[in-house]
Image (cartoon, rainbow, N blue to C red; front, side, top):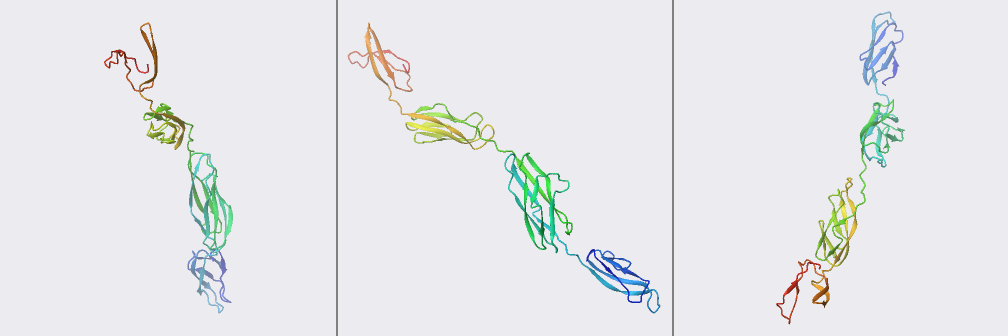
Length: 320
């Protein structure tokens, strides 16, 4: 086998000669010691020998020497690279599995460690060592530490070693992508231009300054309906106007706005009620309640003998 030696000898009574290898890269010769150097075959011959009958400078016919590979493990890793994703300040991401296989012909006694040139210590495997029989495999866990700094890091690696392995050592690369935590939604509330409206009229809803891209919702569309930012009174009653899906001024998304109540009342009858008055020294005092909306004003007439063409006396302003 490679690395082993064997001793060459001549027939009994032969002396004074030397041995030669047809391929010193496969089998080397030192005096009578033949050492296997690599896998293959070499022919070992003799020359310059003195035979028992006194003949000199005789040759010895060659003998083939087959050199084989000694039993040894071979490391096979799957996968050979990992990517972890974390959020700064939050829990570390879950472990991932690394399969260590032995495709050689002897037991693999492996240990783990860092990769030269990668000083990071934030990645490791558990367990940190083990034995795998020829043709066998072992699954281990790859773990990274809690994320802190934001960025993409690849300065940590894992090396699996066994000095007797045919391909010792083998490395695994690890990449860690750490992002900033998302912004939290601040407190916010819907604002209404008017919290009390009359059936059939509207008011406008708005979000706090700097908030965008959300929508408004009515808790009772039978009382108040919402279209965009317009709130319309439908029937007498109360409803809460809330906001959903808003992007806050700090960048937080899908934020909600606390409710603001709106009261809807029925349209009052036109005209006035409760008119009363009296005459004092040719002056007439009229007391009444204005229940109308949207009027331009009122006219007060003096009617004599139920004459419809009675003269208009004054025109009070609205809400007189």
